Each structure stands twice: as structure tokens, then as C-alpha cells.
Image 1: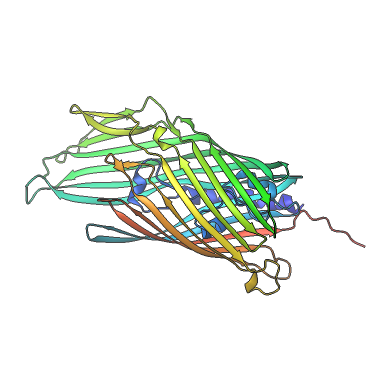
Image 2 (image 1 turned 90 degrees about the horizontal axis):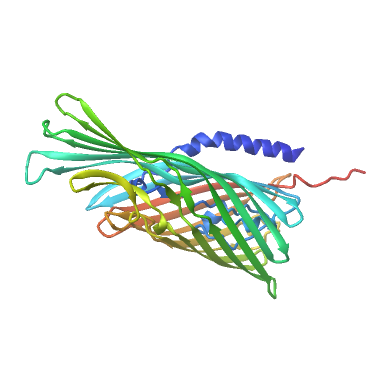
Length: 433
């Protein structure tokens, strides 16, 4: 009965989270490129270790980075995990600085064991976010009085609802798969206006809508060593495939004097796609005290075509380009320490976490590689202790992220991540004398 009530509660949580998830969670001008700013797709405990987790397996966590980890879930417990974040971003370019604030729904997931050595998980997580608004004003040629202004605005993003399962067919060896429905859209505006009223205003509107699937596969092998040590290898693969996003571009030329507009509409005939992705990781555990992991992921964006508007031989062209993206490489290192997970002393049960990562850009800016990403994080897992609950965790972490490239905008983002892991024995059978 408890499990049914909790499943219903989670379903209601997902439904209520949909409009929040649909809102943009970024103010970054870099989100105008490609599908936007890619989301971390990690839960509360991962964020304290800066996203590390492909080789982590723990029966008290929902680790959707690798679905093979679901097989480690405790048979008596139902896990629910949800999180939000707040952002403070400082942007700087050529001596100019701007600070923006934002908040974002991050994820809502759940998991439990359905059979011996078989666990399942489901939830909603963001895939990418688009959200920006800025303008640049420059003189026309050598003129000291005439100027033109380019205004850029955009919103949207992609999100996914997934259902996954993990199975341990042989002791120490686990396999898993996540199947997800991915949906969303973006709308990007570019307005070219002029101080000279005799020059027409040119407006371009880019739109695309995605409704597709996503398949993530995972594997973990854990070897038990002496003195309560364990070494785990984790591998992941995401299937790349073509998608029909129906991207369009509408160009409006508005007469500045008469306000009459001429509209030209371009539609892409071909298809874009989601990339193949690969992940490999190694983790070391010492009992319930220490765990340290190293992750490497590669998203094969270089094989993905994306629509691009260009002027070719004095004619406007909107077509798929194979030079828009580049492969994204990311390395994560993170660890956690807990003095004694079962201690009576509250402070000995706190989990202390830290991590760092480096990633290359998946898109190009004016034909050159986009900004690289450097980030570090620190966090704690605070146990919730009362008369009826001693396994749930409040996950808090802070993160600094720097996106920078030579000659481009530099972003320094400070994030506060808040997550809650609800962990209770809903499936325990009670005996009464």
C-alpha cells in the first residue's frame, strides 16, 4: 500500500514539475548555439563530487548516470530523489561585466528493487537549456553618427522522462538500460536594426521541435579486494540516431518608414540527430568510509549535422552543416568520505564530498572551437535523523564553473545545489505477536 501511494506521489511530482522543467534554467549567451547549454544530468550526491559517478554503485542512491547501478538497490527500500539549484553568473568581455541570477529545477527520480538482483528507476531530468538576451551596437563603416544594433534572444530546451532497469546476472557483474522520451523546442530571435531610418530592419526567427527517444546502456563490474576494499569498472553507451526536428527559419524584412514586412520561410529537408556517447570510469571503495572515482565521457557531436543560415553567392541559404559541432570530451574526478555511516554521533555520519572536471565545447563559434569548461565543487550529505527516519539525506553542494575561450565571452558561474534523497523501508514486512 505504501509503495502504491509513493508511486502516485511521484507521478504527481513529475506532472507538477513539467511546467517548471519547461522554463529555461540559464542566462548564458552560449546557450544560443546548438541545442543549448547541456545539463549535468546528475543527482544530488553526484553534484558534490562534480558529476562523478559512472562506476559508483550504492543501494541507497539512484545513480542514473549508469543504469547498471540499479541492481545494487536494497530490496526493502523505496528511493526518491529530487533537486533544484540557484545560479549567479558573472559575464565579462573586453572590460565589460554583467551579473545575472537564475534558478532551475534539476531532476526528480525514484528507484526500487523489483526482484532478486534487479532494480528499476524512473524520473524526469533536463537535457539542455536555452535562455539568453543581449544586444551589441556598432558604427556603420567609418560613420560617427550611424549605427546598427544586433539583438539576440532565445528560450527553450530539451528534457527527458526515462524508465530504466539494472540486472546483476553474475556476482559482481551488472548490466542496465535507460529508455527515455525526449521532447522540447527552442525559439531564437536575431534582430538587425539601424539608426538610419532609410535602412530596413532584418529579423530572423529560428525554430525547432523535438519528439524522439533516447537509449542509454550501462555495465559495471565490481571486484572485492582485501581489507574491505572494492574496485569497480563502469562503462556507458548512448545510442546516436537521427531525429526529425523540423527546423525552420523565417526572415522578416521590415520597411522602417512604412512598417510593411516581407517574409521568407526556409525549411530543412534533411534530418539532424543525437550523438553517440561513450563513458568509461573507475571507482575505489573502502567500506562505507571512502569512495573515489574518475570518469571519462565522449559525445560524438562531430557526426551530427545542424541547420545554419548563411549567405552564399549573395543568396540566403538555410541548410544542414557538418561543420557546426565538434566532439565533446569530459573528465571528472571526485570523492566522498564518511567517518561512520552507522555511528550514533551525528557529525560522524555526515558525508563530505569534493570534485573537479574539465570539458571541451560541443559547438563551434564562427568556425572555431567554443569555450572550454573548468569546474570544481564541494558538498555534504547531511543525514535526516528523527524518531522514524534515519536513512534519508539532504544533499548540499556549491560549484564554480568557468566557460572561456580566447577572444570570446568569459563566464564564471557559482551554483548552489540542493537535493533530497528520501530513503525508507516501504517494502518491509512487519510481524505482530
